[in-house]
Length: 238
Image (cartoon, rainbow, N blue to C red; front, side, top):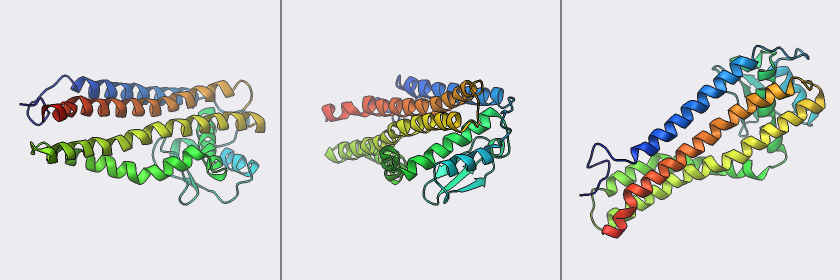
Protein backbone atom coordinates (compact mmCIF):
# COMPACT_ATOMS: atom_id res chain seq x y z
CA UNK A 1 0.00 0.00 0.00
CA UNK A 2 1.44 3.34 -1.00
CA UNK A 3 1.93 6.02 1.63
CA UNK A 4 0.01 8.63 -0.36
CA UNK A 5 -2.31 11.19 1.18
CA UNK A 6 -5.23 9.31 -0.38
CA UNK A 7 -4.43 6.20 1.63
CA UNK A 8 -3.26 7.66 4.94
CA UNK A 9 -4.08 10.58 7.13
CA UNK A 10 -0.50 11.59 7.73
CA UNK A 11 2.91 11.38 6.12
CA UNK A 12 6.22 13.10 6.94
CA UNK A 13 6.13 15.19 3.76
CA UNK A 14 3.44 17.37 5.33
CA UNK A 15 6.35 19.07 7.08
CA UNK A 16 7.42 20.50 3.72
CA UNK A 17 4.01 22.14 3.34
CA UNK A 18 4.16 23.35 6.93
CA UNK A 19 7.60 24.90 6.41
CA UNK A 20 6.37 26.68 3.28
CA UNK A 21 3.31 28.01 5.11
CA UNK A 22 5.44 29.30 7.99
CA UNK A 23 7.83 31.06 5.60
CA UNK A 24 4.90 32.77 3.87
CA UNK A 25 3.36 33.83 7.18
CA UNK A 26 6.67 35.32 8.33
CA UNK A 27 7.06 37.18 5.05
CA UNK A 28 3.50 38.50 5.16
CA UNK A 29 3.86 39.67 8.75
CA UNK A 30 7.21 41.26 7.91
CA UNK A 31 5.94 43.36 5.02
CA UNK A 32 2.87 44.51 6.98
CA UNK A 33 5.01 45.46 9.97
CA UNK A 34 7.63 47.26 7.88
CA UNK A 35 5.04 49.13 5.84
CA UNK A 36 3.16 50.14 8.98
CA UNK A 37 6.37 51.45 10.54
CA UNK A 38 7.44 53.61 7.62
CA UNK A 39 3.93 54.73 6.72
CA UNK A 40 4.28 57.02 9.75
CA UNK A 41 7.09 58.97 8.06
CA UNK A 42 5.79 61.70 5.77
CA UNK A 43 8.01 62.36 2.75
CA UNK A 44 9.64 65.77 2.55
CA UNK A 45 8.24 66.26 -0.96
CA UNK A 46 4.73 65.84 0.52
CA UNK A 47 3.69 63.96 -2.64
CA UNK A 48 1.04 61.28 -2.45
CA UNK A 49 1.60 57.87 -3.94
CA UNK A 50 -0.57 58.81 -6.92
CA UNK A 51 1.28 62.08 -7.49
CA UNK A 52 4.65 60.39 -7.24
CA UNK A 53 3.53 57.73 -9.70
CA UNK A 54 2.38 60.34 -12.22
CA UNK A 55 5.66 62.22 -11.97
CA UNK A 56 7.72 59.05 -12.35
CA UNK A 57 5.75 57.87 -15.37
CA UNK A 58 5.98 61.26 -17.06
CA UNK A 59 9.72 61.48 -16.37
CA UNK A 60 10.07 58.12 -18.13
CA UNK A 61 8.09 59.39 -21.10
CA UNK A 62 5.04 57.26 -20.28
CA UNK A 63 1.75 59.06 -20.78
CA UNK A 64 -0.60 56.23 -21.74
CA UNK A 65 -0.77 54.51 -18.34
CA UNK A 66 -3.81 55.32 -16.18
CA UNK A 67 -3.39 55.63 -12.41
CA UNK A 68 -6.34 54.15 -10.57
CA UNK A 69 -7.44 53.93 -6.95
CA UNK A 70 -8.37 50.39 -5.92
CA UNK A 71 -9.73 49.12 -2.62
CA UNK A 72 -7.78 47.00 -0.19
CA UNK A 73 -4.50 47.17 1.67
CA UNK A 74 -1.31 46.69 -0.34
CA UNK A 75 -3.27 45.40 -3.31
CA UNK A 76 -1.17 47.57 -5.61
CA UNK A 77 -0.31 46.22 -9.04
CA UNK A 78 0.43 47.19 -12.62
CA UNK A 79 -1.76 45.57 -15.26
CA UNK A 80 0.02 45.44 -18.65
CA UNK A 81 -3.14 44.25 -20.40
CA UNK A 82 -4.89 47.61 -20.10
CA UNK A 83 -1.93 49.73 -18.98
CA UNK A 84 -3.32 50.67 -15.60
CA UNK A 85 -1.33 51.34 -12.46
CA UNK A 86 -3.57 50.42 -9.56
CA UNK A 87 -2.82 51.87 -6.12
CA UNK A 88 -4.50 50.71 -2.93
CA UNK A 89 -6.18 52.72 -0.19
CA UNK A 90 -2.99 52.82 1.87
CA UNK A 91 -0.86 54.08 -1.03
CA UNK A 92 -2.93 56.21 -3.42
CA UNK A 93 -3.50 59.24 -1.19
CA UNK A 94 -0.76 58.73 1.38
CA UNK A 95 2.31 60.98 1.55
CA UNK A 96 4.44 58.51 3.52
CA UNK A 97 7.82 57.28 2.31
CA UNK A 98 6.37 53.76 2.35
CA UNK A 99 3.47 54.68 0.06
CA UNK A 100 5.72 56.58 -2.34
CA UNK A 101 8.06 53.58 -2.48
CA UNK A 102 5.29 51.14 -3.31
CA UNK A 103 3.90 53.46 -5.98
CA UNK A 104 7.38 53.81 -7.48
CA UNK A 105 7.77 50.03 -7.50
CA UNK A 106 4.60 49.65 -9.56
CA UNK A 107 5.90 52.34 -11.89
CA UNK A 108 8.96 50.15 -12.28
CA UNK A 109 6.72 47.49 -13.80
CA UNK A 110 5.21 50.03 -16.19
CA UNK A 111 8.72 51.01 -17.29
CA UNK A 112 9.61 47.35 -17.72
CA UNK A 113 6.58 46.99 -19.98
CA UNK A 114 7.58 50.04 -21.99
CA UNK A 115 11.10 48.70 -22.49
CA UNK A 116 9.95 45.14 -23.23
CA UNK A 117 11.85 43.76 -20.26
CA UNK A 118 12.26 40.06 -21.13
CA UNK A 119 11.41 38.49 -17.74
CA UNK A 120 8.18 40.51 -17.57
CA UNK A 121 7.21 39.33 -21.05
CA UNK A 122 7.98 35.74 -20.12
CA UNK A 123 5.98 36.03 -16.90
CA UNK A 124 3.00 37.42 -18.80
CA UNK A 125 3.13 34.50 -21.23
CA UNK A 126 3.28 32.04 -18.33
CA UNK A 127 0.19 33.38 -16.54
CA UNK A 128 -2.43 31.25 -18.37
CA UNK A 129 -0.16 28.20 -18.35
CA UNK A 130 0.56 28.55 -14.62
CA UNK A 131 -3.12 29.10 -13.78
CA UNK A 132 -4.15 26.06 -15.80
CA UNK A 133 -1.35 23.94 -14.34
CA UNK A 134 -2.14 24.77 -10.73
CA UNK A 135 -5.84 24.07 -11.34
CA UNK A 136 -5.52 20.75 -13.14
CA UNK A 137 -2.49 19.27 -11.34
CA UNK A 138 -4.22 17.80 -8.27
CA UNK A 139 -7.24 16.41 -10.16
CA UNK A 140 -4.85 14.58 -12.50
CA UNK A 141 -2.86 13.19 -9.57
CA UNK A 142 -5.94 12.07 -7.66
CA UNK A 143 -7.46 10.39 -10.70
CA UNK A 144 -4.14 8.69 -11.39
CA UNK A 145 -4.14 7.16 -7.92
CA UNK A 146 -7.15 5.05 -8.84
CA UNK A 147 -5.16 3.31 -11.57
CA UNK A 148 -2.38 0.83 -10.94
CA UNK A 149 -1.33 0.57 -14.57
CA UNK A 150 0.83 2.80 -16.73
CA UNK A 151 -2.22 5.02 -17.20
CA UNK A 152 -2.17 5.99 -13.53
CA UNK A 153 1.56 6.68 -13.62
CA UNK A 154 1.11 8.83 -16.72
CA UNK A 155 -1.68 10.89 -15.13
CA UNK A 156 0.32 11.44 -11.94
CA UNK A 157 3.40 12.52 -13.88
CA UNK A 158 1.28 14.88 -15.94
CA UNK A 159 -0.14 16.35 -12.73
CA UNK A 160 3.34 16.93 -11.33
CA UNK A 161 4.44 18.48 -14.62
CA UNK A 162 1.43 20.81 -14.61
CA UNK A 163 2.20 21.91 -11.06
CA UNK A 164 5.79 22.64 -12.08
CA UNK A 165 4.47 25.35 -14.43
CA UNK A 166 3.22 27.25 -11.38
CA UNK A 167 6.64 26.86 -9.77
CA UNK A 168 8.38 28.19 -12.87
CA UNK A 169 6.04 31.19 -12.82
CA UNK A 170 7.02 31.92 -9.21
CA UNK A 171 10.71 31.73 -10.11
CA UNK A 172 10.37 34.02 -13.13
CA UNK A 173 8.51 36.51 -10.94
CA UNK A 174 11.58 37.04 -8.73
CA UNK A 175 13.81 38.93 -11.20
CA UNK A 176 10.78 40.95 -12.33
CA UNK A 177 10.08 42.15 -8.79
CA UNK A 178 13.72 42.73 -7.84
CA UNK A 179 14.32 44.76 -10.99
CA UNK A 180 11.20 46.87 -10.42
CA UNK A 181 12.42 47.75 -6.92
CA UNK A 182 15.88 48.69 -8.19
CA UNK A 183 14.32 50.92 -10.82
CA UNK A 184 12.06 52.50 -8.20
CA UNK A 185 14.87 53.38 -5.82
CA UNK A 186 17.00 54.81 -8.61
CA UNK A 187 14.18 56.95 -9.99
CA UNK A 188 13.14 58.21 -6.56
CA UNK A 189 16.68 59.37 -5.93
CA UNK A 190 17.25 60.89 -9.38
CA UNK A 191 13.96 62.80 -9.40
CA UNK A 192 14.38 64.05 -5.82
CA UNK A 193 10.99 62.70 -4.77
CA UNK A 194 12.76 61.18 -1.77
CA UNK A 195 15.94 62.48 -0.19
CA UNK A 196 19.01 60.56 0.99
CA UNK A 197 17.52 60.04 4.46
CA UNK A 198 14.22 58.71 3.13
CA UNK A 199 15.57 56.31 0.52
CA UNK A 200 16.92 53.78 3.10
CA UNK A 201 13.44 53.65 4.67
CA UNK A 202 11.82 52.93 1.34
CA UNK A 203 14.50 50.35 0.55
CA UNK A 204 13.50 48.43 3.68
CA UNK A 205 9.85 48.47 2.65
CA UNK A 206 10.66 47.16 -0.81
CA UNK A 207 13.00 44.49 0.56
CA UNK A 208 10.27 43.27 2.89
CA UNK A 209 7.84 43.16 -0.04
CA UNK A 210 10.38 41.27 -2.17
CA UNK A 211 10.74 38.64 0.54
CA UNK A 212 7.07 37.74 0.13
CA UNK A 213 7.81 36.68 -3.46
CA UNK A 214 10.83 34.69 -2.31
CA UNK A 215 8.65 33.00 0.30
CA UNK A 216 5.97 32.14 -2.27
CA UNK A 217 8.59 30.64 -4.58
CA UNK A 218 10.09 28.62 -1.73
CA UNK A 219 6.67 27.32 -0.71
CA UNK A 220 5.90 26.30 -4.29
CA UNK A 221 9.25 24.49 -4.60
CA UNK A 222 8.63 22.64 -1.33
CA UNK A 223 5.19 21.60 -2.52
CA UNK A 224 6.66 20.32 -5.80
CA UNK A 225 9.33 18.44 -3.85
CA UNK A 226 6.59 16.84 -1.76
CA UNK A 227 4.76 15.67 -4.87
CA UNK A 228 7.94 14.14 -6.27
CA UNK A 229 8.69 12.36 -2.98
CA UNK A 230 5.14 11.08 -2.62
CA UNK A 231 4.58 9.85 -6.12
CA UNK A 232 8.05 9.45 -7.61
CA UNK A 233 8.37 5.98 -6.14
CA UNK A 234 5.27 4.80 -7.98
CA UNK A 235 7.23 4.52 -11.23
CA UNK A 236 9.72 2.18 -9.57
CA UNK A 237 7.03 0.16 -7.81
CA UNK A 238 5.04 -0.30 -11.01
